[in-house]
Amino acid sequence: MLLQWLLNFQRRLAGGKTRLAGPITASDWAKLDARQAFSHIYRHRLWGGTGFYSGAGSHDPGIVTPYVDAIRTWAMGQGPLDAVDLGCGDFHVGAAVRPLFRDYVACDVVPDLIAHHQTGPHAGNVDFRCLDLARDPLPAGDVVFIRQVLQHLPNAMVQDLIPRLYAYRWLVLTEHLPSTPGFTLNLDKPIGPGIRLKIGSGIDLTAEPFLLRALEERVMCEVPQFGGLVRTTLYRLRP
Image (tube, rainbow, N blue to C red; front, side):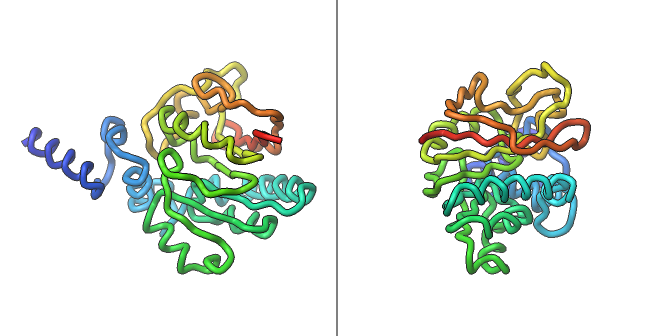
């Protein structure tokens, strides 16, 4: 029976129709691609809430308000910019910063989530697209936002993204990091709802194995959450 279950599981993966029910193990998560993994997270509300809900980090005013204020201050000094939001989730945060930019492309890997947005209140002034940031061609723009997304991905997916980030002039990256100095950077993990904070690690794109090359780097805002820090860093990637 176990062998038959494994065979059925592999067939569902190959067909892109995996619909796992209830809790699954780390080894199960490792078999999923991004679309399957994040579809499962939203379907089973593993970040809480109702409907499409991207978790407390996208709704807690103590986290969201300083972020929006920092983006507003920076954007107002830049002139008109086209923005790309990779991993837009439920778009609660994206909706708050969208008025600061000229064109705005919001992307997520979950087809049902994007279909929901395409008929929602922001459909008229946001270009919502379904894509996998680790595999698919990325939209053009001046600045790319990646907010609390990479912390859920394995290192291989992050590495696949890095070379394509240089198409943008600016990267605004938000990650949940340990508050303890000297933590081990970029420990690997399977894709899934959990983050590296649980293993005492966090993402730094300029460190091994990613080695993002930035012309400038500065912290835009930083707030405490769950014993760590939600830090937003601005990288200038090209003149």
